Length: 259
Ligand SMILES: Nc1nc2c(c(=O)[nH]1)N[C@H]1C(S)=C(S)[C@@H](COP(=O)(O)O)O[C@H]1N2
Ligand SMILES: [Mo]
Image 1: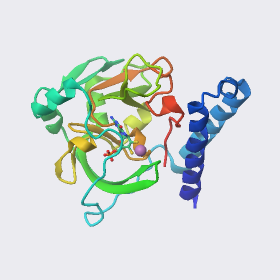
Image 2: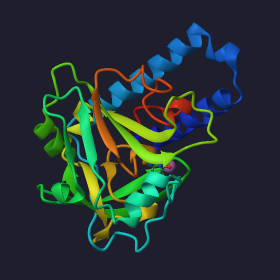
Image 3: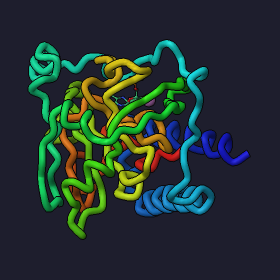
Image 4: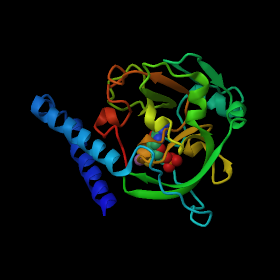
């Protein structure tokens, strides 16, 4: 009962926010009353979600019989960058995940380093706001494993994921042009939040984000950042790029994309 209504609300919210942004509706966008209303609506839905489900609630997991043979690709299917092409040609042997920002012990990890850490496998449903879903089997290292190694400082609140794929041609007001996403530390420490290197028992395909992607199973498709290059622990999101904490968020999508 609750979930479909929530989804309809989300679709409406995304659908309603985006045309205004794309049309450059400055008068409305600049209105304090409207901004206040939008902010409180998002705040209310986020609070309501947390009250209904709790911070520890698990996303539904499925069985071996449920996952699709093919996990379709959406957004970038092959990053258009020289660096990524080099990393791919080298089978990601020289790729490193750099983890820094507000942490006591910044570090970088090779794919082999990550694969040597305790792993989690989960069969979950991916829901894209464009109106499609697919069930996939993901294996990766829980993000909290990595965070416990680098030790976030007491001021840390969010985890930011810069990706390898440039999104040129977009109108993001940003010094950097790649896809990026962010989640808060509660979501980052959730057991189903993993850095996935395998999909359906195979190495993660390029079209799905090789060598490493985020799976944050209680949120929608656009939060599932592919082609991870870095993890930055930060205190605030409003000074990054477009100020809203993600590529699509900067264009009007909700930051909290709870399903
Ligand atoms: N780096 C990056 N991550 C991304 C995207 C993208 O274009 N680039 N698209 C997002 C969207 S909208 C969806 S639905 C999923 C698609 O994941 P898939 O290609 O594995 O289906 O990735 C998300 N993460
Ligand atoms: Mo999506």
